[in-house]
Image (tube, rainbow, N blue to C red; front, side, top):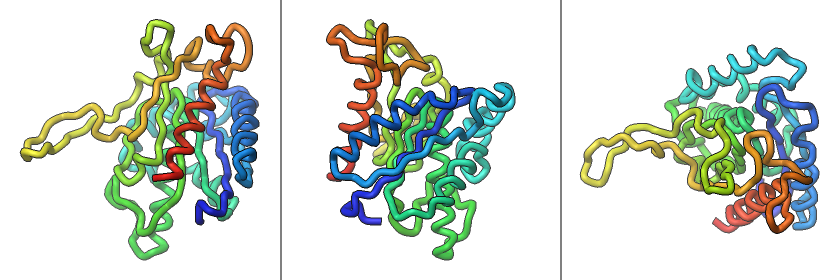
Length: 251
């Protein structure tokens, strides 16, 4: 698709044991922002591991599988497969914007890898390629990970991924979930020496959001989740997403 078409589909991906409308406010706010900017917008709420009506233990097992066993083999990702199937079912010529909270951010990355791998297979490149292999042609997408565990981001995808975590009033991370997972890996420096880097597979853009509360509070819209200027967490989160999204349109 061409970005000049200004057609976009927002997929809001919840984490484990999430209330059915937990991301509804974010969906409506992002839709309004994009429509005001001239985009033709559609959106869908997805639950890669199920909502709070499903047993928590099963959801945690699936997320753990995706975070560790499927970290470099996204075709095996349980949440990623669910999200990829939902996107394929729409079969729309629009830019997919995947916004994942918590484990939903992991599923978002894996889903895009699965879709890109499927596209490369259609080009005759086969499936199950080495982790990090770029698709056979450009695969437009945007991914936002909010309060998510860290998972490896392939090099070809890193410019299109925003990672956001919460900071408290003292400037310290206040979301324990963002401490899970890893971006680390071996890196060969300019001298040809191999060293271990904790950001080897990190996304290009990492932001720290000064929001009140912690993991479940990025999308709060009322007191007590207002900063000293009276700005709610939701506005802080959406503004960070919006500024990053706008910047990606000019790169």
